Image 1 (spheres, rainbow, N blue to C red):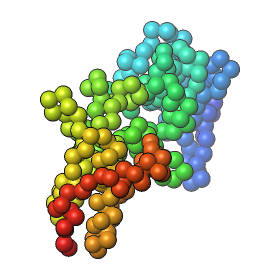
Image 2 (spheres, rainbow, N blue to C red):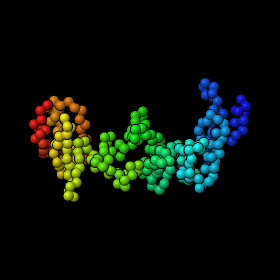
Image 3 (cartoon, helix red, strand yellow):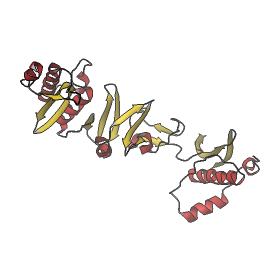
Image 4 (cartoon, one colour):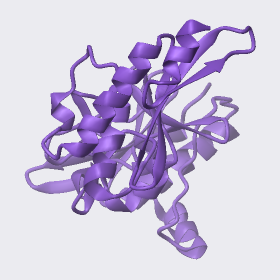
Length: 269
């Protein structure tokens, strides 16, 4: 009881009680008319120290994200939120710092994702998480891959299927991502400054379907190979390419004309 009474006299600290009657302390601050929660603490003094640090950050334009120390009572994420609010006048609950035409999303002090400002609304309401090297957000109970939002397929390989133009795999600005192979079973190849597309399919090992002048032809050839193998009784769960860049009649024309390797045409299960 004494600790709770003392806490009531500490600026920014409010005692609270859990369902099991355990006492804890909430820390908060009001800045530019906005009430901001700084976190919950087991100790009243820690909660007060978080309040003091938040006050100092908001009052000092030289207090930067980079000056964070692991011994700080204020979480790194909250530090980013406060500095962004101080500098840009927009409070975002996730560790985002807005810059001209783009923003940073801080996974940690050393891991900084970069996005176009067009994506700010989405990521200001979706927390980015990392597990096993994969970045994702939770959306309506499902895990949505960050890479998938930018056309990078789940099993795509960097350097073969896509690349980051500036070499930074944390830079998800649209201008920095180049999709090299957007369709299942299609591989772009560049030999002697001539670009062509190989279509392959896995049966018991990879089978070459053919080499084609355009990405769409290769994607249609892959679909045609899937159809042929299914007719032969192959029950593998092949993903089929959805090609929205051509009309149904154009697709049918390509499908009819595109040639499939004899090895697949004659394949016997």
